[in-house]
Structure formats: structure tokens, C-alpha cells
Image 1 (cartoon, rainbow, N blue to C red):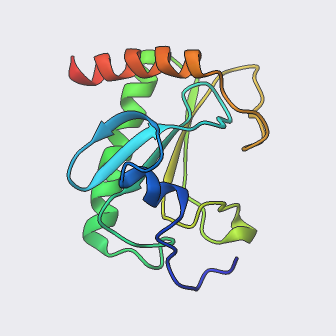
Image 2: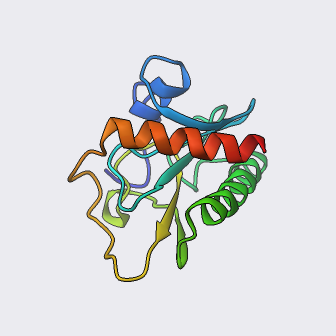
Length: 145
């Protein structure tokens, strides 16, 4: 899919925002939603999406919603680092299929990076639901603390 096109309101992230598809929610406010990736590249892989912007990528989103998105991504990156103690944290955002984008609703990836562990290939293996629930509980607790 190219960089340009019409927003598809049936994409999986739009469905999650509307409550039509489940997620392991970590954070939500009026404008932004964050949840654990079902196909993580690393333990703690988190996705951050805008709720009010029907934007496919960074070229489509208005500056106000982009600022809200990055503020939450920064906060959650700190929470993940505090809780999981990785040696690094990767924050990424892809635009268009050739750049690696697979869901065409703008989103940011927060991927903890642990020494000695390579990063998995996205969407090749689904995370264990019990593991996701346990991690979700830990991170939500830290966010509330």
C-alpha cells in the first residue's frame, strides 16, 4: 500500500478504538490509546494510537494529535523502562508498506530491547495471552502508582 490513499475505518486499530476488537489496554484518554502488541518483537512491545485522528500515517495527521500521540509514547517508554529494565528502548513509526507499515492507522511502536536478544520479526508469532495479561497488570499498576 502506498503512502497515499483513503483511510479505512475497518482497520484493526479503528475496530479496537470502537471496542469491536479486544486489546490488552495499558493507557487510554480522550485522544490516545496504548496497548500491548499481540505479535511482539520483544517482551513489552507496546502500540500507541490516536483515537480521534483518522490518519493513515504521519503525512495525514494534524500536529495537535501528533503531539498528543508522542507525549503518551514518551511517557509509556519511561514506564516500560522503569518496569522491565531493558538495556535500550526503540520507538518507531512507519509510513507506507515499503517502510514496514502493516496497519494503516498511524501508530507508534515502543519496543524494549534487551542485551543479547535479537528482535523478533513482527507478526510471526503470537504472544501467550496469559503472559500478556500478567504484563498488562504490572504496567497498569505502575501507571497508576
